[in-house]
Image (cartoon, rainbow, N blue to C red; front, side):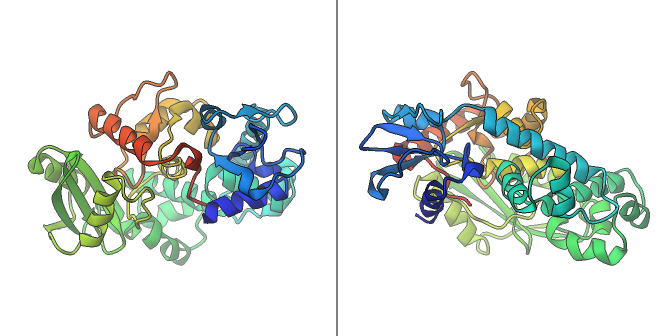
Length: 359
């Protein structure tokens, strides 16, 4: 309901930065529109919200002839502007990039830029800069460079600036990361679920692995492969609350998972994974659509690879990404499981409620 109210406010203010994020349909007219549509404002009780024009049309509504909802021109223009902003950020890591400076580059006001950037990318320009810088740092460390050299290479002005950010984002200090996560303590458990066996593992900061399979041995092997130098112990009691949330989700009783995660990721992976978390329950997106959303329209294969390396199944819903022709595509935990997950979601959510519950 909170998200519906945000959508309704966007309709009332004719917010053009929300175009492409959802459409609204009016029961009394049978028409659906973009949030910025200049037509007469409907009564609230007559309005339904949909994440995609296709969902509105499936429900029997027809597109508005004034605002032409679903046409890609505005969204594509915003994606292009955000791409320019991203390239500017990436080439100016040596110092802080202000919204004013970014706005000058793409000819938008700082306020408007912030809103458009966050809608397209799912994160703010500042968060993007930090994620990109952190991704470059990880590459440097994996290549064997010292922490001191790496931090200056990627634009951190001092080691204190690096360390004050990395515990939450890396999940460990840079030195520990370079050592493969040595010193990390991970507890895990394995339980039965509708899709076979479910492994859930967590550090003290959050869930670091969610895996689906048929064999406890293979699931445990995958976990130790992800974290080869960590201290890993089985604990069938400590993770009960998070396991329950995941089982409720698999049974169609908890559509929206909001669990803390502690995973390793490059800047690109993180952008893909955060975008996946915005796909509404019961909906799907193509690999190309995800690539366009993150400002990398030619990176469909890289998006597929990011989905394939997702370490926390379900929490980051990579199963909601399909091929453009509607084929399910691959899935790290098996195509049949992906098919069953999507069928469960589609069965559990009403058509008129297919809008994102995440802000």
